[in-house]
Image 1 (cartoon, chains in turn red, yellow):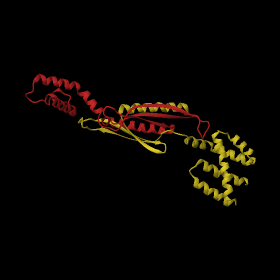
Image 2 (tube, chains in turn purple, blue; image 1 turned 90 degrees about the vertical axis):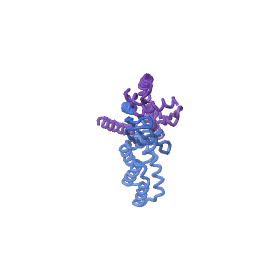
Image 3 (cartoon, each protein chain N blue to C red; image 1 turned 45 degrees about the horizontal axis):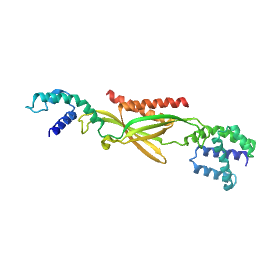
Image 4 (cartoon, rainbow over the protein chains, first blue to last red; image 1 turned 135 degrees about the horizontal axis):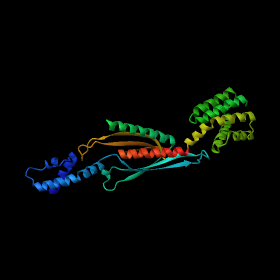
Length: 140
Length: 176
């Protein structure tokens, strides 16, 4: 019962995002032991930001990008043309499935994509637009 | 076949080569040519088939227009006709080369990218969140089929992704 009560208390603090000691102290009932109240508040305050970050990291989401690698190759010949020098890019994205679904064994899948120069240029244009939109939102 | 007819036929051939999807148009133009010049379609088709082999072989071996001309003369074509063909070849070879390059094998080619971003307002754990997320959808051609890959990125991840892609672009440009 004690553990359950503590759990509820900490969840409430994290949920509400309480950061000031007065707010946390106000949660305890009137005749609660003073020193215990202060000790608990102090411990909770120390851990609140770590708990918030962890909650945010494990919230439901689409699969998340965890890593990316790339390499540039030069194609020198093919069955259509015996001699050429066409650069191309291979991009590998490591994606982790929703943490909440996998528990302790997250499934990481790797997607390898080939990009020609034209595709890369178009992609960069798109990414640039995202960046502009993001700065517009951030500046509001 | 007279020179004029040969020139017209060559034009039709090259138009087809540069737009290989226009098969119907090519066949229609061939039968028009046959009726206009009173040649029967059957033999015309087989001649055209063998003539079409020449440009694709030339493309494979990166032949110059001089070599194409020499090949044709060796095959028994008159000099005038061979020169005309070689001229057309020179004019069209950049487009034909580009076409051949684009048909080169590509593994898991990226076809399209869509995105949306927004703000996480709240969750079951945290009442007020206010963090920005970016969702990307990549459409990839795997073998014959399209596959959609969905992923979410945080802002710092997005900026480092953008940075890496710009590095790739610099690298590709230095090799072209």
